[in-house]
Length: 124
Image (cartoon, rainbow, N blue to C red):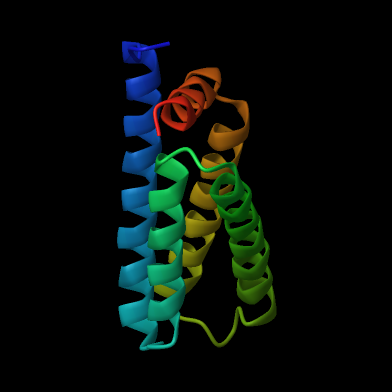
């Protein structure tokens, strides 16, 4: 497979757009919560996504783990700290959890995206 088809590129661009949205939302929540330690998590996620887009299988598994862990932690945090969190942080955290689950499902189920990953591995 020397050339990548348009559907695979569209799938990659969709994943990238969702990831950028996740990073923007995450950064906004980190700034609102004044949680400077979370910046490291954001940077780690960006680095892992870079390797995901390069087609590395290990990075795909790490990203899926991060998305799963993030969704569980955010929902748990909102439930346990509901009285202590502002409405903005609660809603933002739930939106971020849903977006993480959507990204996870997209990575696992989208055949065009998997075709893109296979093409990247083959041409690396």
